[in-house]
Image (tube, rainbow, N blue to C red; front, side, top):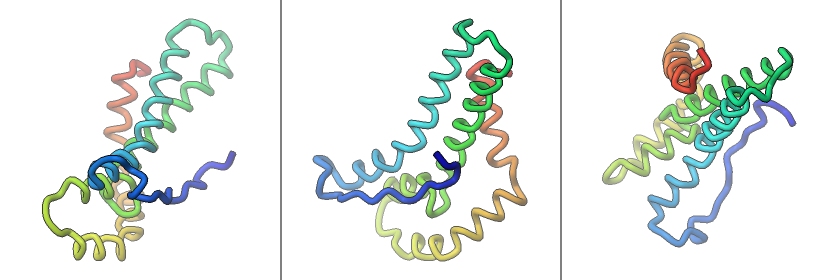
Length: 135
């Protein structure tokens, strides 16, 4: 399994048996929610006392860190990340022009955030890992 091979999930809104807006929110939230669920499950394993070797402990510790980081990163409201899909689905009215502009520059905005403002990601990541009790 490669790291960073993520690609947008294609889905058919007609297959959702609810309001399209809420369907879009649920589909977009699935990835980040799976990351936080994996982090919580790995934390339970770490705190259970079942992990006795340093290598296995380090593996689970970094597994938690990476999944919390991916949770926070994917919730950034910058296209093409899931957070932007959730935000646009929650905004009232027509946001197509704003979405088009952000999609056009989304990658550049994302790179600027990653390289020039890492605390936007690191702060919430450290806070959540702290809540999980790993610091």
